[in-house]
Image (cartoon, rainbow, N blue to C red):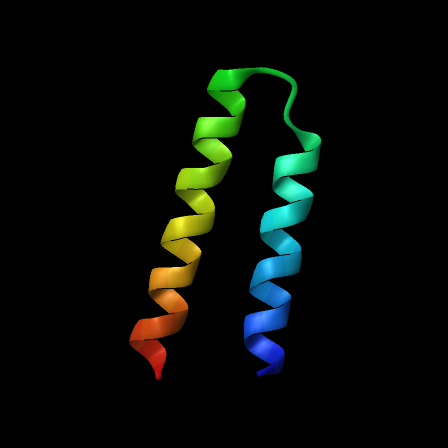
Length: 42
């Protein structure tokens, strides 16, 4: 559960740091990839 919280926190930080819609798309894509990686490890 701690890993899930860390992934969500990292995704929120990435989303907060972008300034354009293109940046948001890239951040969302990276967050999705991180979630997939975390799910595959389980």
